Length: 448
Ligand code: NDP
Ligand code: 2IT
Image (cartoon, rainbow, N blue to C red; front, side, top):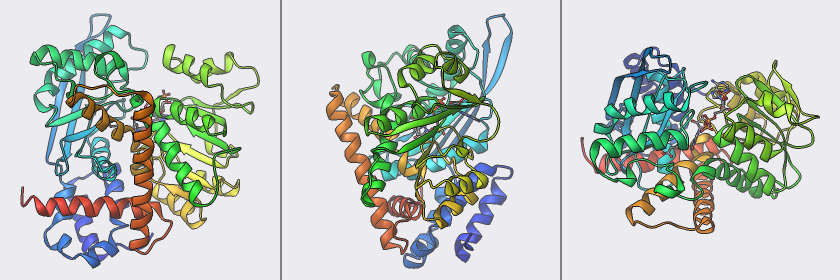
């Protein structure tokens, strides 16, 4: 990797010292700083005003105990987090993750990414993230409800439609948002629809929000292909994960004429040369809350592979949609060897820094998550707009808005990459364009 600009190196070292042991947060900061050399040389006021240090320090971080009672009567204790990173562009906005791996460093990396992503959407939303080390896997609906109610009993005092607006992420979907919203409503005695997004369609949710991250990812990749005179038609696609983002990435890739030959969960990956059966995948994952092993049972010809890497499956387009650092250097080498031409991140930071370097050096079109997966949060902002105006838009209109937003993000990334001397490099484009917008707002709002 290129050495950092000396000013940025100094600031990065302070970040390392002040946030010991938070490897994913360090990685997210470094990935942004690596793009910013030309920006701080052109605009030294960003360094002089200490805009970067201010952006690396969350405005507020809340950590709390979440006690609840399981179905056997045992008292369980989890840890809850909300990191409110930056509200210079709008209320804090970002998802909640329920997964046993959640800790402060993970929430901070996600919150930091979120401020840049949300800036890229062009919508009035700041950035934050939260969650818990609670593992919803294998828990009954009643246990999930008990946990969500206890979590909200602390979280409610920190959020609000003009303050901080959480949504879903790993382990948090429509069911959890329902229980969280119900408890917020009960405690506050307010039907404050705009306090959470990802709500059900019958009670304040937006059409297309469920599909938005996966659809938006494929729209973004389509723009990248189009810029090279190509399209999804006839492409072989591999999607990692089989959750919310993955399922709707598969759906839109199929609609655009691609064949999706593999997807995964934490127990392995499925290869289905006949093309992933989307309805079966939805039944197994969304309805039955099952495992991919159950998909294979209903699908002769498909195989479940429990060793090796999904990135060994030959494809033209790779869409990592599971979790951070799931696509490492060996995986990138394998994708390049097998001729992949596009990698677009549906997950947050799924590609390691070394893997990103391999892909960029090989001239693979690479879209960072903060650009490519921004369709989810952008549609959350559309949900907030509908809530604020007590309106409900059609599927067609909402999807058109999402497509327009993704084209806008692509355009912003491409032109900022050109401006800062890295044409075609979406990493540089995404980081520089969002950073300039944020830093200008930081300066305009004074020392706060
Ligand atoms: P889901 O919980 O719906 O699905 C997550 C999927 O990833 C599951 O298939 C899960 O497998 C797999 N996975 C999760 N953690 C791991 C792990 N440590 N190792 C291997 N596999 C894992 O989450 P989403 O689809 O909502 O989120 C996926 C990614 O997309 C995350 O990085 C999230 O931050 C990002 N994202 C989500 C958005 C949204 O709107 N939901 C918006 C933008 C980004 P298993 O079930 O076996 O755990
Ligand atoms: O990472 C993300 O952008 C999300 N999990 C969605 C956040 C949101 O507020 O919709």
